[in-house]
Image (cartoon, rainbow, N blue to C red):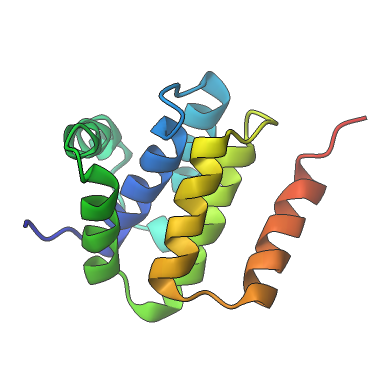
Amino acid sequence: MKEISPQDALVYIMVTISAADTTMTDAELASIGNVVSRLPVFRGFDRARLPKLASDCYALLADEDGLDKILDLAHAALPEPLFDTAYALAVEVAAADLHVEQEELEFLQMMRDRWALDELTVAAIERSARVRFRKL
């Protein structure tokens, strides 16, 4: 299996959560672009690479065990302190269209299990997203 950079791994995670329900919404795509533009973890990242990375990620998702392959790649690429960052970015993208589908929840569960994220961290990340995306 090929190796990817930590930044590429984070993009793969965001693309995967967006595609998990088979529909990438405009809000989710905008969220990915926003995240890449503003977060320090993406400093030096070439945004022009996003379409190619998304395409590569889709190709992996087409495989029967595509979700596991993506999690394996991300796990190998990310240092442990970025496991919760990856989870937070996935939650951010999933919440962007103000509705989280069952498939997205299942991928989030796979991430929690793979990276053994503690319950308090997960709860804080999810609560933070609910607060940020609340509507009147």
